[in-house]
Length: 473
Image 1: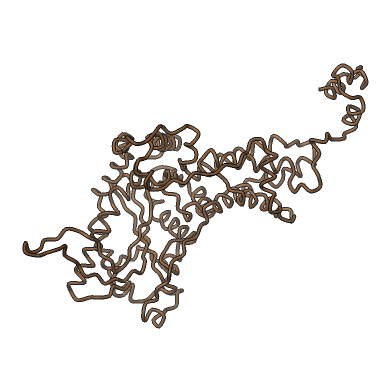
Image 2: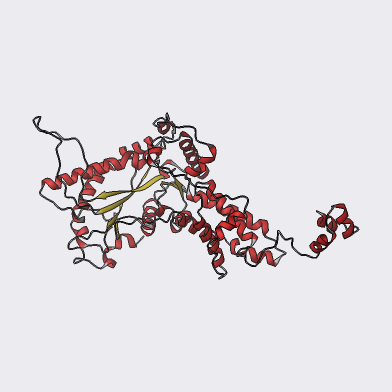
């Protein structure tokens, strides 16, 4: 304040200002000459400027407020991405720890695990906040019911049937057993449905490296269905993006409004940088459900996937009765197609949305199912750790705060400030950094055993010929 008073009043001497504000004359003299205070001095060992560190702080706080608390490695990665823009060396091993210590807004905490047993007694506070988020998003973007979509993947072991109730002789002792082929090769079906009872064509992921001719020649799959291959039949980030393009192709022409709402879970392939950027470019608004809540909040889980798996199991039983003892992909596709046609109906789809409280919109449908007798009220401060909102909304808030931070430091008359703000002033660069760092938070990869099918390698065909179903997307 002494320096400000001295600079504002030309009649006030430096010595007089020091006396009025009770500061050391020499200190005030140094400040008037432009020398920084010791607390404001940035040592040469510091990697990032104050502006850059403030950007990271804003980024961390926004993610934390939306249920994505950052780890040390994520903070280091964000810093390294900023340093890479100017070809600087990466930060050291303890940089993130020291960074947090000098930021009063940040604190390191142990995060709490959230297992399934606790999820069975879901907190009504979390559920109500989820419905509030959905309602506000629909109102904000003017989304119609036929543009409200839910998508998820479900897995099948090709040769495993489901258990059930059967009729036997009254003289039989013990529970009956049903023979199954036992082929445990994994297949993933990715499906999307909307609140008006429509389902798009499935996207099927099988284990393998090549597409085989008999998958198409000997099955009755429609030509609009998409088939992709991964080493283990599981989805990954690339497959997730391929599906998103498939979804966009199937729904763009039938969309009745400018925006589509896509409700999903927190699988890593749904939150990759490429996935979120594609959604933003194509006006697809994503909302991520709270963890461990898909059995309550996801229409596909509530009304569709259960009947689909049971119907598939019945199809496999029919094959067994015809003395087919090994289920390959050639047998899987017709069996899955029959089960899909039987269960992915308008009635089941609307029932799923109704049971999830989304169409018609009624949160009490879900809350009334909760077993809350053994639960204590959830502390307000814990909510942000458990509720996963839309990654697209997270990105919007992060970008908005980054812009605020940049403009706070930006001075068009000061080239130095402009140069310092330049790495963050361009939206695409900020978007890429924020999305990439968010993607890294959930980049845990699943590892599973690969089981080879006899003859698959021998019958391998040119992938350029048989991947046409997904390549045109």
